[in-house]
Length: 70
Image (cartoon, rainbow, N blue to C red):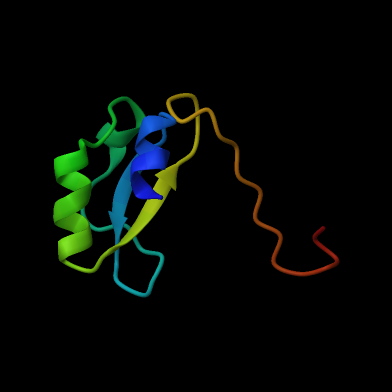
């Protein structure tokens, strides 16, 4: 699954375990993708992974917290 994300060109960052807050600075992830080795280290530490949206990943995210927002 994770390798598929990398192979598809998504830029991934480490996120706190069982949370949503990025670990450390991640501005570089807007212009360069993490390596498979980086992601393997994050997974070994049981961190979540986040996908950086924008031009590098080619993804736009919309967060709708409830039915009214949709």
